[in-house]
Structures are given as structure tokens and as C-alpha cells.
Length: 89
Image (tube, rainbow, N blue to C red; front, top):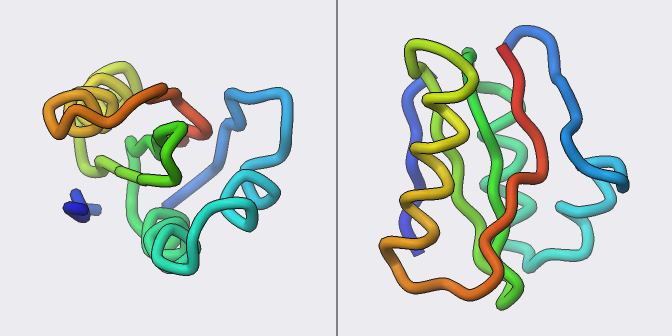
């Protein structure tokens, strides 16, 4: 798995479950990745795959670009069920 990093201000949760619950249900690796995501500067986005993989993108020009960046990373690596869990600016 790749970690996509660059740059945390305010979080905007874009899921029905709290992002922390999503991160805790993922692998220990993804918990670490999620913590790095939370500490990064925005705009940023956190994405998970249904196989337990996780990706993030930060430091993009806007939230939409961060979301697309993280989703593309997940899809590029052929992970199933890529979905946006959280994004922030």
C-alpha cells in the first residue's frame, strides 16, 4: 500500500459513521495512516477500500481535488470498493 501525503485544520465527515470508527475497523496500518491524515494540512481526504486498504491525499488546491486524488490512488492500485470516508480543508 502506498501512503499519499503532503500536508489539518477543520474536519468535514462525509460518511454515516464517524471517521474514527472507520479507522478502527481497518488494519493497524490504516490506523497509523489515518492518524497521519488527521495531522496533515488541508485540503485533504481519506479513502478506504473494502479490502481494508487505505489512502489519503493532502495539500491539494481544494477539497474536491483532494478527494479525487485519494480516490484515484485507491482505484489506480485496483482496490475494490474505494470510498471517501472523510475530507477537510
